[in-house]
Image (cartoon, rainbow over all chains, first blue to last red; front, side, top):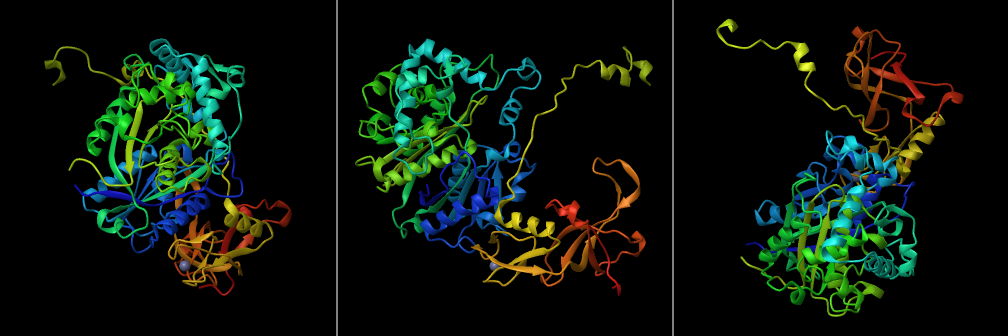
Length: 387
Length: 166
Ligand SMILES: [Zn+2]
C-alpha cells in the first residue's frame, strides 16, 4: 500500500481567547505556517483539502462553505468532515492511498471563544428524548465514567490528580500551551468539586487555536525535509446508548488501536512506541486511554504514572506537550495538536520538552462528552507496517 | 375501498397523539469580526466603504479580508472606495426570513462597488420600483444618519438608483 508521510505542520498555539482575530484569520495563520514548513504552494500543489468541523461549534450550518479561502482551497477539491481532527487525517491518508491526491492539507480549528454558552452546545449533543430531557450538564457523563473507571480499575482520585500535576508541569516547557503550572496533588484534590468525582482542575479548559497538517505520498515525501511517516490509522465508535456502553473501559479506543497497530505492523505497543499523546481532556481519561491502547495492562496505568514512567524523561513519555490539561481543550482540533506535538518530538524540535531518542509515536483522540468516538494514529521516523 | 380492510383510517388528530419531545437549543454566538472586517465596519460607521488591494493579483477586495484567497498571501494595502456601484444581480423576494408572505417585496441585490473591479457585496435596493430594476443599473448608497450608525452592514440603509440612471 502507498506510504503516507506528514511533510509539514502549522499551529497557532492555544489561547483562552483571541478577540482580535476572526476564525478565518486564525486558520490562515496555521495554514501559512504549515505550507511554509512543508515548502508547498497550496494553490498549485495540494490535491485535496480536508477540514474537521462541527457546525454547532462554528455557529454556521453547512460549515464547509466557509472552509476553502483561508486554507488555500478556493476552486480546489475541498471537503469537511463532521468529526475529530484525527478522523480528518485518516481521510487524508485514504485520499493519498487511493491515488486521488499526492498532497493533502488537513485543517481543524477551535474558536470556542465565539460561543457564548458552550454548555448549551454540549447539552445539545445528548440524546434528545431520553438523556437530554433529564437536564444534566453534559460533563456529568464524564463524572459517571470516571466513577466506574475508578471502581473497576482500582484507581484513586489522588492518582488522577497526578496526571494533572504532570501535564500542567509539562506545559510549562511548551510555549504553545497556556496552562503551565507547578501544582501539587492537594491543589487538584482541593479544587472545587464539579461533577464528583471530577473536580475543577481534573477538567481541561476550552481554548481557541487552529492547526494544519500537510500529508504527502511517498514519492513526494522522499524529497522533503524530515518527513514523519503515518504508519497506521484506526478509528471506532461504541454505541451511543448510555445503558449499553461500557462505562469503565473505552472499547472503541481499544478497537481503534488494534486497527492502527495492524496497519503499522505493531505487536507489542509498549516496546515499539517511544512517546504517546493521548486524550486527557479529563484527568482520568489519560489513564483509561493508556490501558485501552494496550500501552499498559488494565489497572496498571496509575502505577506506571506514579513511578514516573510517563514523565518526559520516563520510559514512555505521555503528553509531553502538556496534553489538553496543559494546552487547553481545542475541541475537534485536539487530535491535530497532538499530532503536531508528535511531529515536533520525532523531528527533535520540541525544545525544552524534547524526549530523547523518540523514533515512534502514538496519537489518540476522543471526541469528548457524550461521545464514544475515538481515533488512533501511529507515527514514525521510518516507514513501517503491513502492506 | 378502505371499507374492505379492517381497522379505522388515521386522521390528523391521531398523529398528534404520537409522543414528541420539544427542545430549543441554547446556541448563542458572538463572532470576532477579525482585523480586516473590523476596519471595514469601522469605515461604515464613518460613512466610508473601505477595500483592500492584493499586491500580487492587484484585485481590490471589498469587503476587505486579511488574505487574498487566490494568491494566498496577506494583504494590507487599504483603499477608500466610492459609495456608488452597479447592480450585478438582484431578486425580488415576496417572502420574509421565515418564508412568510409579505406585501412589499424585499429587494436583495449584489452591488459591484465602483473602483473595485467588479467586486462588491450583498445588500438591498430602495427608492425604486421593483419592475424597473435592471442588471447593470447604477446605484448609490443611502446612509443612516451618522448618529445612528453602529459599525454594521446596515449602516448603509440601501442602494438607490443613481442620478443619471443606467
Ligand atoms: Zn491576490
